[in-house]
Amino acid sequence: MGAIIKAIEYVYPKNPITNEDLGYMYPDYDFSKFANKVGIEIRYWVKENETALDLAVEACEKIFLKIRREEIDYILYCTQSPEYFLPTTACILQNKLDLRKDVGALDFNLGCSGFTTGVSLAKGLISSGQVRNVLLVTAETYSKYIHPQDRSNKGIFGDAAAATLISYSEDECIGEFLFGTDGSGYDKLIVKNGCSRFGFDSNAEEVAYGTNNLYTDNHLYMNGPEIFNFTNKIIPDFTKDILAKNNLNLLDPSQYVFHQANAFMLNFLRNKIKIEQDKFFIDLRDGGNTVSCTIPIALKKYLSSKDSIDENIIIVGFGVGLSWSGGLIKIKDKL
Amino acid sequence: MTKQEFFVNLKEELEIDVALVGVINLKNLDEWDSMTAMVLIGYVSNEFGVTLTAEDLEVITTIDSLIEKIGVDKFD
Image (tube, rainbow over all chains, first blue to last red; front, top):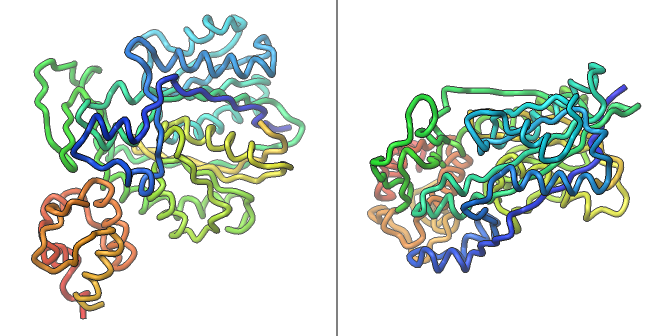
């Protein structure tokens, strides 16, 4: 008895922003080099009246072209862009998707470690015999949080939603997962104002940081160097721990799909762990860093390029929290 | 590594157009941005086993000051 990832679908907003577009918005910065270093050419931003839930509904409807919506037993909805403080966005999603009313539905607030954690939670629900079909949805619109003059983060982050169907299977196709949390780094990537601790401040001071970027405490702040150092320090050994937990050697997995943070960081990690280049997925060109959506999008892109599929894939997510998780998945069909 | 070799390597790693010397202020270079800062952190970590923090990056100005932060004893 086990669980398997059966389908993945994703959507971007309709509005593509190219590096050339960013060049017009920020004429004092050369975005042409952005494609080489960061690996991103296009990111998509929602319109003002569009939300992560809107994207999520679209992604889920694509899944329902493959399976009947009546079969869904549980919604795990990962977002840091909820519709409201309350109620739970997953409940609204149940209604918008016209799912059965005897389903479980909850939001969980994670960023770049959200998908990997969600896969593990879905496995737990299925393996314990509670449900058969879990709809894991990741949906994020960081573009709404980024200060208009924060060109670095405007360039890196894109909006997206991904829907993943995880189902009961005779064979276990979701292996062992490991987790990590270090809340001491909570303020390294944060939107400080507008919640319970600090309310929205209409007079929040504009602060310059990084290289001529601006933010206020109402906006997303990312301490890039500290996030990089955290990743560099934790993720190589963590990846090796995942391999050991699954009784695998470095060469055994057919592919490594990490959170697509940025191309430089990914290459840096790959070199440090000593993973072969053709076994390490990097593709942020179309879409950018879509937070909890990067891994399902990368899985879909990777598998669509394969002719025959019998894959052992190590997935690793890491970021805001600080939080990280990862494990082994086995894929036997195109998703 | 000598300081001269460091200047050459740094120029290559950070993809800087001009020749580098100790008194050059990194942050005045056209190429200096958040990504270049990350490349610098990665290079220094790999080459010297030294972690540059966000605070270090705030303080560093010239390449000489970067060498001091890395540790002068790490250079021949």
